[in-house]
Amino acid sequence: MAPGSKFTRHSVACFGYDIPYAEAGSGDVIVSLPGSAGLEMSTAKDILAESYRVIELDPPGWGDTPALAAEMKQRHLAIVLAEVIADLGIARYHLIGTSMGGANAYWLAAQFPERVKSLTLEAPMVFHRQEDLHNPDEGFIQALRAGAPAPDVSGYPAPPPHPRKPWADANFFRDQMRKRFKMMAKTDYPGDNSALEEFAHRGKVPTTLLIGSEDEILKQSFADQFQVTVPHAHVVRIEGATHDIQNTAPEAFVAAMQAQVCG
Image (tube, rainbow, N blue to C red):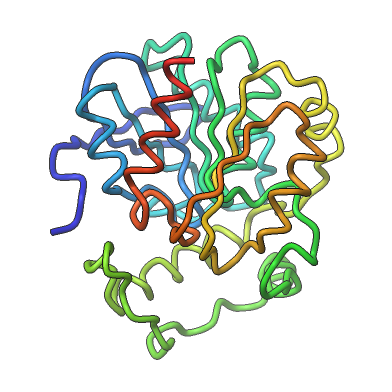
């Protein structure tokens, strides 16, 4: 059975957008910003919700939200998300950024450091070099941004589901691909991260990088590159985990989050 059964779905209006979110648990607050397919439940979030209040947001133009009319920079998206969290009455919180959501999380922490108790980045698509990617092809995203039509994914070859993620069948995979293409057409990824790098070097927010040994997008060299950019970061390499650490190595992900929350 897919995870997330104990999470309830809500939405909040902010800056003219209707922002969906899922929530479960009580205690210290953990806010999660999703990867490129948008809001997604996970085994790790189910476990965390047993001890903490866990909230995952679906950013404007991501996941099941309507496509954006124009490009939105990730640094501006972070401002919207920060306001949504404040509207929920949450003053300070531990922040997770997954994959492309890692840039959103870092921009939020950079612009509102007083609100973020800690920052955990799960295989984030930020601060990487082309040589840190298994298949470096950002030209595809640039083409979408220039107006190229999104490819038909109905016949896309889907990889076999991971043993710890059996619900991720071909239909699940293709639905995620559709959502990614919609979002990528209106993002500024990879964007100009020079201001973000300056913040990273100052090292105000406790930061942990999680990367799986079987990550299919990021090479292991990325962890070393990230450590150069973020010298104070704690790097955790998780054996056997793919890009989706929350589902393929949930126990290790939860242990890392517990270490962050407990400080």
